[in-house]
Image (cartoon, rainbow, N blue to C red; front, side, top):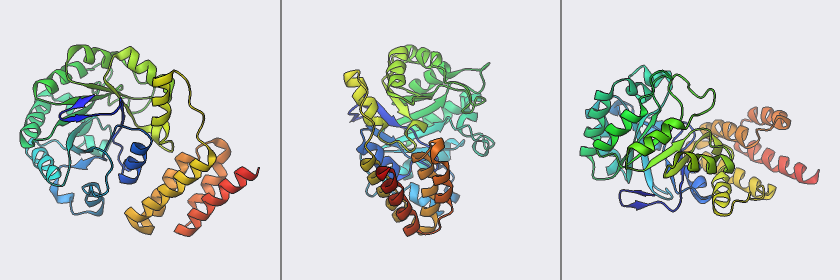
Length: 322
């Protein structure tokens, strides 16, 4: 798939997820076969850019692969300025968030709340596209509510405004993450517009990836929650798409190595205090089986870097021994 001057090596993209797709996670997914990873959402409000959170999200040193930065907001001028600033900081693609269902975002009339106002959508898209000389992409949901699925109309606006590629989550804002994603709207969008379309939502297995590609006819897939604690899902999906066969489960030694490396990158990026807290979340995803509940609970009580790393080592030593 082509996005502006960038040719993606395959059809697999990491979805932007606030508090998840930081640089360590993005780089890990790229290593395991993702063609591109979109950054965490960055507010278009310059008043918050001096916070530690925003500074880390605007830093691209050490980034692997194409640097795609997602911005969110409701004011066309602020969005255009945020896009320009991030390009100056090294962004190679600007992605616009019109899919986030979170209340704190929607109450500012940003994220998926914008789907209720096609005129404002158009104003924002035109302003951002005009402000930068890099490709601009857009992520949306299928609409605000099941009875108001206007994804096809928004997609037509996006194409007319010069958006280079469109990602669509197969739920409305009202659906949040409940129920099953639906792909009929995504299929209709793909038939209606000529720019690349990317399907997102409930793509948790290689078999589901194959189904969504075939059913919708989209150009690529965007994997979000399916990659949490499982960055190798991109390798698994690509193998299945190439061969029609399932790849053998990841070896425990490899899983140990990945987890420890991931934790150390979190400590390095955030410092010990915040890194320890981010590590709890990621370890919870890596060890998400019911039988691992006690291990997760013990890990969440640890308060030092050494304790966390030692516990991961012990867990795998005991697993292998047993």
